[in-house]
Length: 237
Image (cartoon, rainbow, N blue to C red; front, side, top):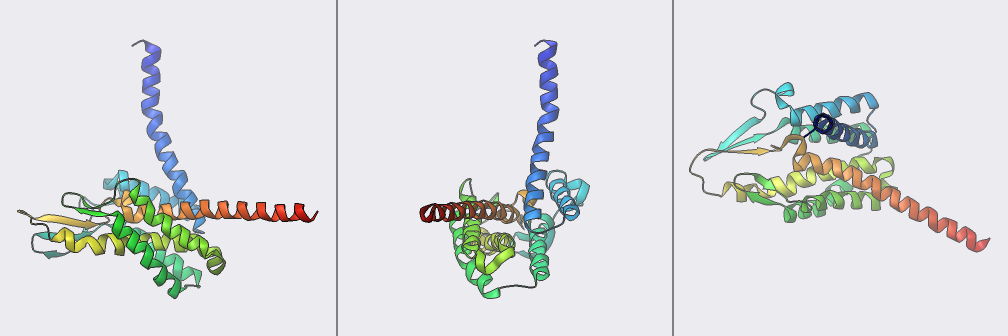
């Protein structure tokens, strides 16, 4: 390998992680801005979630989960980023909106929970998992439900999409499959951590992806509506 090739490989090794994390940062900022979170707060939340996922020792202690209780040989814990973080965002933003549509929220959770349950599977060594692209279905359903009700939700469409994505997976995947996971016979103590994959956990990802899907669907329907209006105008002209 000549010197030029070595230099290019070296540059590539340095730049690839930079582009990767910058891409994650842009996606995070896009989601937080869609949730009407200010730029400064969005930057803080983006860096916090990225660092807590890939460099947990810089954010969290050596024990990156909080143990709640024990059932037999199973130690049940929660992860601050994978579970608590998205729940707090949902609750804070819902309260701030002052327009919580509880009936819509509870009724819309039902199909999202069912979808999350069907798309996930309890695996002894990994927890509650869903292979790609199956894990995309719950957030897509959350986004579709909210976009179809955009007239009712108005400016809170993305917020409800995020909330449905988060709680739909918590209830439909983790809570519903938990008895199955705990029923597996184990010879030694095991940890069951809800949200254990941190920022790349299905709970957090579903909330984020639900917002992205909702924005894409909103753009699609708005473009289609504009095209129909223009076609009618041309017909009358």
